[in-house]
Image (cartoon, rainbow, N blue to C red; front, side, top):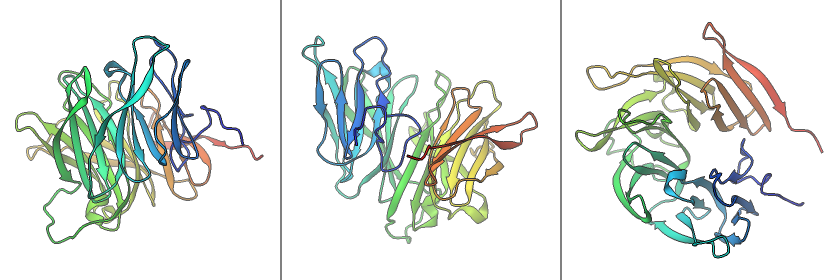
Length: 322
């Protein structure tokens, strides 16, 4: 079967977006795509094989930091590749960083660009989260491990080591001088303490990451999390995060101001059902008003909230049979 850069899935589950076009409109067009789960990068003038290993995840670095992609290989390694060259004829891609982690496999990664720096969050199969910070905005080789912690609120020394099958990270898309860096994270593991999605926020005063919200009702904290998606916020007095578990897709409202204990208020406003099987991916539109979801049933569903705040399925997109 012939496969183009616009039709190759970049993970073992289908993506809503077709491949990963380079979002830089001012340079030669580049695409990241896979053949047999091998990552290639294609531009006007070159055709580079980035890795011979299977590729499970590919993420572009934010455009203001140059042309680079991070990828998770099938063996769990986390690599960063950068485009170098003074002109279009000499452009090539080089491996500029290998994030070492000998104890476990990387499951998910996301970049978060704050007002002052670029951060990379990676979730691992042992239930740990690592936050790296770029030390020099002009040198993608120079990263420092800023923090390492488990996705739990309380200390749990007797739990043992978890074995996590997957993880999902979603950064708060809001950026600005007054916005704290924050992201949501959930795991799919056999230990319920790790699974519930939590919102982590960076405390500038004490230079540490703190859990400020847990997106699970008391009876749902052990539910395995498949995907989380943080919605863009254009003028809402609260944040919106979607969390997909085996029970459906929960829509959560998160307050903007912390309580006296430093926690954010949370409210589960909807539980969306319709997918037959596991939800694989969720994406919000640019306004944070429409949620697109897809899963093992091969169907894309679009969800919206009406003026009364009631969520409903707005459209269903099914793949045509061959």
